[in-house]
Image 1 (cartoon, one colour):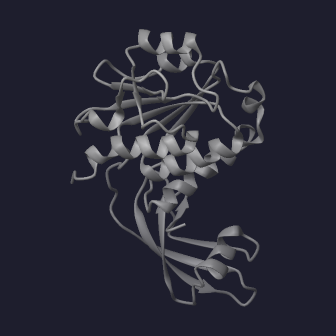
Image 2 (spheres, rainbow, N blue to C red; image 1 turned 135 degrees about the vertical axis):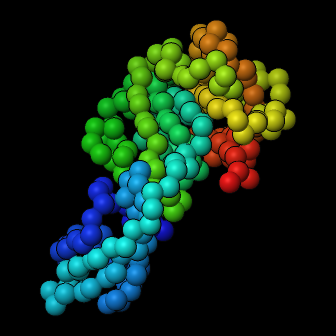
Length: 242
């Protein structure tokens, strides 16, 4: 992680030697007494924490915070058909690092039903994956993440008419995603099917909701690879903004 996210703003903290963050400071960052380390508050400011090691190898920290700053989340909503938990872990972490504004996971017609009951979704692991991606990106804003029982319910939650709507499909898409310029003033909704792809009924549902099919070339990609590639294309319209 490139910074450590805190749930709340604090002037000082004390972590015992078994705290994972203490272990990270000691073993990964190799922070010495008096060193300053990058911290941030979830959806809040960044700052510096000064490290003070104690005799019992616990650590005390004091903080100096910068002013609050605007969210750097991108106006990109990512709809993803539930896939294997290890695939969803990569999507959550890498998508959060790229700046996806909202994740909408749904159980697709070709999703394995048991994926919805994975331990990834039952506890806080999915939240931890989002946080790891945000920390990697040296950011502070966590994206939203919701779950839906099917594609239609997820599509009903997609934003307004001005939202550009694309669905990835290597089989029926007429044009590549990269040939369609995305204006930085527009939000984008990107739909990616589960590992076994879209059903015929889901393709029809996507068309009914105004989605156009686009591809990433002729190669069949893993879901997480397609996500990173496609989000990168859409995010590039926002990289030059102030």
